[in-house]
Image (cartoon, rainbow, N blue to C red; front, side, top):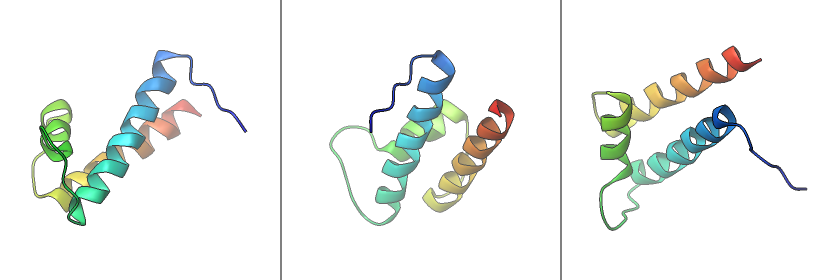
Length: 70
């Protein structure tokens, strides 16, 4: 099954989902080269707190955006 995200809103929601998944992996100890997803999310969404709190806040942002979309 193939899914196409072709509107700016759908692309933005998909990007948030990707960031959530990457941040969840970082909370479990996975690392990456370059800036951490934690730092990217904190800067982009102006969130504060530890990784778990930032992940929770990002999840809430995603849920609100999905509810607003429907």
